[in-house]
Length: 176
Image (tube, rainbow, N blue to C red; front, side):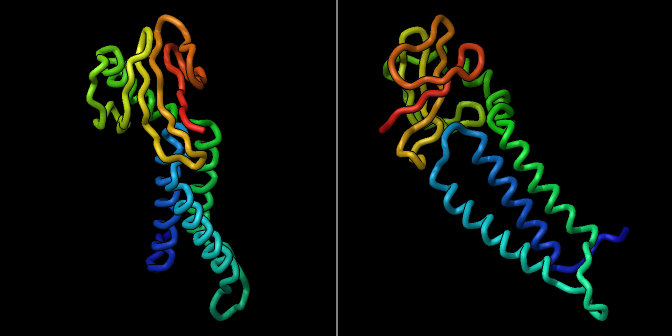
């Protein structure tokens, strides 16, 4: 099988790969930011392009036919949906960041300066809580809430909205 040299095919496949990558990045943090709106419009544009490609007929024969390259975008979309459905991006990014997050959460003081990277997460807000710390990693979300993680190794945090994530870690949300 010879790879295609058609620039439209390469552009379309690259556009689907970019949409998949951006979707996985967005799904790797708790909460949905406003970037999801632009990303959704991008996916709609790709769906329209897909419908157009499906209508393209073979030159000379007038028949529609599937080309081998068409399975690459399909595999990218299905893989992205599967990974997002399994929360794999969130768990993978957290696992890569956990040592840095734990080290930083253990050293939080009342006067801690935020706005820095903790592992692969940009931390906007940090607060010391009894027995640990909580910090925001996703602000300005679709439901007007901020999301982050809370580290509480001794017991579950009592005040606020917390959902157990893993071990001493909780997903924390704040807002209306």
